[in-house]
Length: 295
Length: 295
Image 1 (spheres, rainbow over the protein chains, first blue to last red):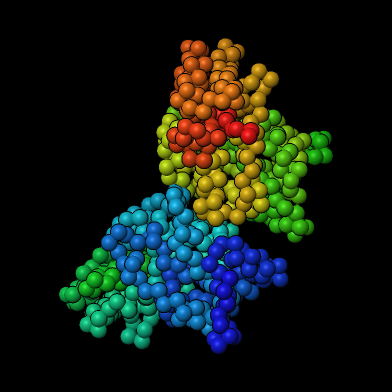
Image 2: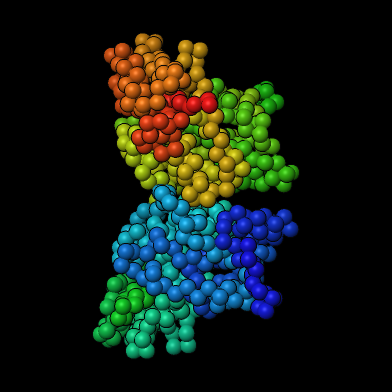
């Protein structure tokens, strides 16, 4: 195990690169009666991740963050190689946000040669993000199961920005009886409305400006819902029209669905979720908003 | 939670039918500093199961046995409905063997409506038993993962009789980082050599007599190995010839393979495993023996 050098902030977390180190640290914390909070990430940390770590810090005695760019959730033509890996900065951010331990494994530690075990949530894995990114959710379900088993945490924290992902992880955890509570935290946004994402760094200024059509469309749709519109078809028309006003947006999907099943909502449902995904140049952005009656 | 009536042996275990009850009992045992041993079964317990429970009793402070005839590991034309479920006798056997708690869930507890999460060990799930029983190992991997998560045990005990199953569970546990140790226990046999199995109860006396060809063939093959034969082809010829001498045996496979991968062994390997499966009337039996150099 390595520790950050003395010149760094005293809050710098311990860094573990293998499973046994994590287990020992967690066992030691448990021995002190501490509860364990866990924040799995792919690094390239932003204020959204920070909010997850801070929430874990507030709710748990010992906070583990994992940083692992998981190859099994990337398609063959996706950005696995190019995905940013700013190690020193990420470790500093973890420490500042209150992490006690950062698990930073290599691919070989997570997937030794001949690796062959996978977890899959049927149905949900094949629609929307799953339809566009075949194998993506199988990779997520597998790595999250492994990380949960390694961290042995009481609570795990996910961002709502990846709505379908957190829903799948909730279903998986419930169905496999994983002894962990899933906490979903609000999406963090830049002041202009863009949902924070490590992939935003890929955007040119023009693409970023165009990308704002997603959050604009979501907010407009939520306003319509708040104004009383309950017909999913009318709501999705609002959503799509607002995005269509930005011709450079190449839409993968823009839908209004049931928040628990991601299937078609009933017409008078009091809760729906608007999900959008679109490409801007070579960068793909996703975003979502819950539509909920306050009554 | 129900407890056996006072007229029963004082060793009668507690019986839990839901997940929370198991977790509470296990947490209480952990609170006393006890280690947890776990024996997953489908009931219809015989001396093979008893030896697993007794081993767990000897090695662990608190012993959980599960009895669940798992529908997802049965094919559509297999014996799920017919599989024996002698509840009272099974509970008595568990108690006598030293179990502290029996988890006896319904299908609805394990697989609520809409269940969609599965665990799969690629490669190994598609050969030998997996080739003949498509989906079988996916069902086993899934239910075993769930049961491990429910029992929260330190050690789980499996019989070597289901060789491919225990190997798959070892691989799955290692690859998913499940925090549990897998212990494989020797196959128990009747005095005539027949490997104990809940399915032996299906056999007519004539079928049972015929079924002995499997263990006879395995013992003869092991003798050849002990005599110095190291050519897998020659060994598998011995295996198949001995079974062929019983024409009523309908062989699914009879092979000599590498004990860790179930692929073809090298010619001078010091360790191989002989695996056999055959049908006798409507009953399918499997058996195996490790071939190991003692030098």
